[in-house]
Image (cartoon, rainbow, N blue to C red; front, side, top):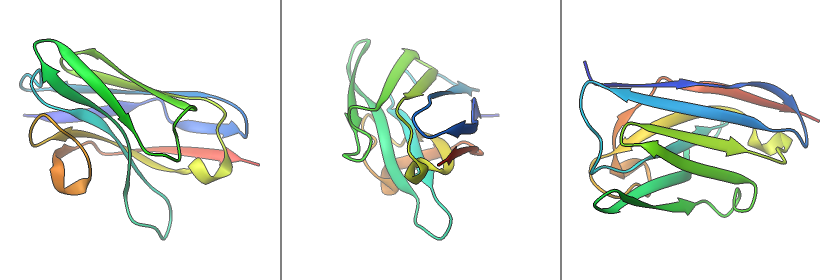
Length: 125
């Protein structure tokens, strides 16, 4: 069974940090993008960050403007990706979803081939 499993969500005060992890299983994702989306209550799911495959074992990172400079995405190996979230703000509160791309690039929901089940991140003010 091919699946993505997230871990690391929780409750944190504004200004704090959290680290999310995602592990894929069932097949290799070496040549595929992996990344993160989030969905806040009453809002549409939005792109957060991605590691897009650039050839060989090279991935380049791509971020939404709202998280640039605060979040860092890392492709730890072909099947795991993590998201280090620093200087969190209440607006970052959402369910965070790990995603694997249909191909080498992950840009928006239309380019997602597989979703994780989601993990809650809550930032209190």
